[in-house]
Structure formats: C-alpha cells, structure tokens
Length: 160
Image: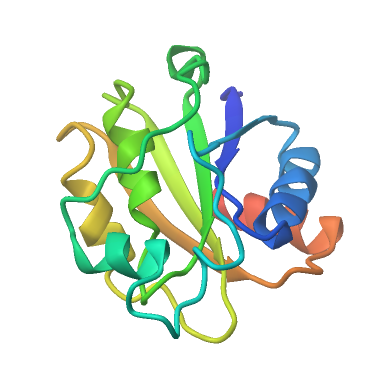
C-alpha cells in the first residue's frame, strides 16, 4: 500500500475543508501550502486587474513564496495536490510548491475547488514544474461539501 499525502493551498478555507476530508478518506497525512504573505480579501478580488492574484495569474513566471518547505515529499508515493481554480488553472503558488521539492517517480493527483470552471489546462500547465518521471493525473473538481464516502469511492476508482 502506498503512503499518501494531501497537500493543499486554500485562500478562503473551502479547499482546506475538502483537503481534510480527503485526507481522512485516503488515510493520508495532510500538509497546508502556506504563502509567505497571506492573501487578503483585496488580494483575491479577481474583478480588480491590479489585485495581487490577478497580477500573479497574468504572469506565468510568477512564483509566490511559500512559508516553509517541510512537506517531506520523499516519504510519500502518492501526493494529492489541491487548490482553488484561478483563471482556469492552478494558482502560481502551486508551481512554487512543485518546484520546491523533488517529485521524481511520484504520482501526483490533482484536485480542485471551483465556483464553476473546470481544470482547463491545469495538468499540462503544472507538468513543467516537476521532473519528467513524475506522473501528474488530473483528478476532480470537488465541491466544498464533498462527503467522505464519495471521496473514498473516488480513491477506490483511482486505484491508489
């Protein structure tokens, strides 16, 4: 049986709730990807093209700093990586996280929360941030009130 980790970034708390339930369902450890500078409500205002999140998402080379690098990725075989969908992809802090560790030979399964959009090109957008031997699987866009039972079912379907 593979050792699993649920690593997540949550700006508003929705993804955090889903990540905790997923960790319970997968019998996995969990780790919060924390920005060095916490996002404020103003930072997250996607209607303001000058908000922090808007500026970061316009610049594909943006790599917001993360608060720590204590995820111990080397201890895990399967890593679920979760985030809110921003502009039809993962927030650039996810690239920062992926580029901060060696994921060689690991399987990454993506999950996201969203107000209505899907994954878009997220998996391909993130592939350049990990080693060639890393497997990135597009997972699911999950609702904020996902049941543990539905997540257990999904994990069984994944075969991990």
